[in-house]
Amino acid sequence: MELRAEIETTIWPFKDAAGELAENLTSRTRNLRCLVGTNSWLIETDQENSKDTWWFTGTNMIWHVVVTGYPSKDKELYERNHPEQVGMIGRRSTRVFESVDGNPGRPARTMDLLGMPSARICWLAFCSGSCLKREGRQIFPPSDLWKELVIAPSGFTDKTTVFEDELGLPSSVDLYTTNRQPVLQYRLLQSTNVLGRDFPLVFHLAQYRPAGTNGWELHLAAKGRVTSIKQNESDISIEFQKSVEK
Image (cartoon, rainbow, N blue to C red; front, side, top):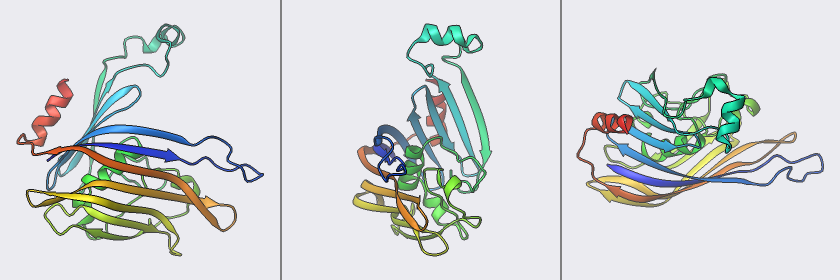
């Protein structure tokens, strides 16, 4: 199945010594394309300066990047100050990571895959079925700030409800610390069934962080909605090749 989704994320800033928010809320909306199979998936994302394509083959995650711009609005000034970067637009690169279940989350002191929280949220909503079926699975929050604020050497406990079909996508996910403090909550609001498979149409997610001595507060809120869904007859490997060649 081919899905296109819009995911809006909002980051809550930290509070200052007076208890006031130190900065304004930061919200971003990303449009993502996703191909979903029973044990393989592809996610395409457009970031500020690149187009990233991730393909889970069933045994590996392959990351292909095309540079689409500079991290500056002033192209000439950036090239003058960074001569080694001249000509980087259009540059392509590919990396391969071993993976048995396509899980982009990683423990503390290890970099997450899929680049940004909205892509990892997309994975949880549409592509996490093969991971959720594994005994001993570990699910991690989409924002990796938890690695700096939460001590969780053995990961998190999860309570997850999934659809009972061959994909097994989640309808609800809760992550807890060892003392049962909620770290993440994912809730499905609306779904659809296509060819005997259940897919989310609208969902919300909240991630929490420690605040003060014993308190916790909202860190990230996200809401996603599917803008289109259809059957795609092409093999995902062929779709990956098309994406690489664009």
